Image (cartoon, rainbow, N blue to C red):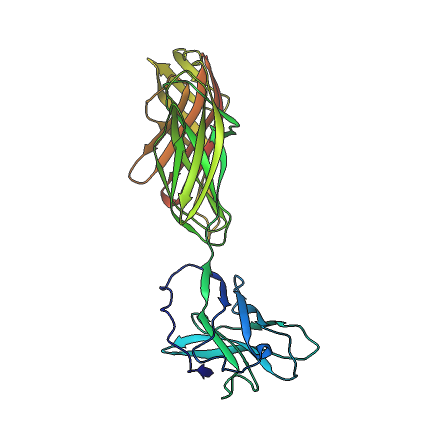
Amino acid sequence: MLAVSVLPTLAGGAPATAAVLVKQTATLTESVAGMPAAGTPAYRQIERARVVVTHPAGSSSATIKGSITLKAEPEEEGDHLQIGLGQQSGASCEISAVLTETTSPDDDAVYEMQAVEEPPNGSWDCVVARVGPAYLGGPDDFDVMIDRLTDHYAKPKLAVGAVELLGSKQKRLRLVPGVSTKHTVTVRNTSDVEAKGVVLRVTGKRIKAPRVKVGTVPKADEVRVQVPITLQAKRRSKVAVTVSGSGARASRTLAVVPVRPPAKPRAGRYSSDNDVTFRVRKGRVVGWRGQALTSCGGYPDLPTTSWNMYDFPSTKIPRNGIVDARDKGSNYVSTLRFRIAGGKVTKGHFSYSGPDRCFADLDFTATRG
C-alpha cells in the first residue's frame, strides 16, 4: 500500500452509516501546494480529474472509472498518468488501488481509465490524480491533485399501490358523506433498501383521515394498511394518498364522489350456503357464526387442517352499510367484513389467526331468510 504523504490534511470523513453505499464520486480541479512547479509544460499539468466508483449490490468488488484531462496534448511519450484510491491516514492518502495510463504524442489531452478492484473494509475515502515520469510513489511528480470521495447511498423507493374497499380496487372513492369508510392501501418499496418510519397521509378538500404509521417496509416488499376516510360534505373532491419515510416519498390522487346511503338493513335472520348465520337487530349484527377450514402448525412438520366453527361479537352496522370490525383477544385476532343493503349481504369475509399458528379464512354472502 502506497502513502502519498506530501498532501495537505483532508477534510473530515462522513459519519458512519448503516445505509447501503452504491456509488462514490470526485471531481478534482486544484493541485496541491507547490505544484505544478514553475516552467512545467502544460501537457504535464492536470486541468481536472474525475472518478466514479460503482458498488454493485451483493458484490465485494467495485468498478472504477476515471479520467484525467491535461491542459494540453502531450508532446513527449512515456509520462505516467495515474488515479489512486485510498483511505485517509492523517495527512496521507494510503493508496490501495491504482489506475494507470501513459501519454503519447498521438493522443489527445483526455485519458480514460477503468478497473475492477476490491475495496478495503469501509471502502476508499480519498483519491489522488498525478502525472509524473515514474509510477506512483516516485519523487519527481509534475502535478498532483487530491480530494475526498463523495459517498452516494441507496435510498428506498416508495410507491402507493392499490386502494381497496372490501377487496375491490377503487379507481375512485364512492363515499357516503359524514360516514368513515375504511380503505386498505398497499405501500410498496421497490428498492434494495428498507424504508423505516414510513407514514401514510390522506389529504384533500372536505376530507378527514388520520395519519397512519406504516412503520418499516422491507426492501422489494409491500405492506398493507387500513385508513378510515370521511367525506365531510355532499360535494365531489379529490384525495392525495401520500407515503413518506427514510427520505423517500410517493403520492397518488383519486377522485371522490358522494353517494347516497344504501337501503337500511332489514331486521331478521340471515344465512348462506356455507353455514354462515347471524341476525340483524336494531342496526347491529348479532350472533354471527360461521364454519371455516382451519390450518394449524407447519414447517418443519406438515400443517394440519380441520373444520371449525367461529363466532364474532355483536357489532354496529354503519350508515354506509359496510361492516369492518376487528375482535382481538389475548392470543387471537379475528376480522369480519361485509357490505349489507336491504336484506342482502355481499363481499363477506371472515379471518382468524390464533395460537399454534392456526389460520382460517372464509368468504361468504348471505340473504335474509
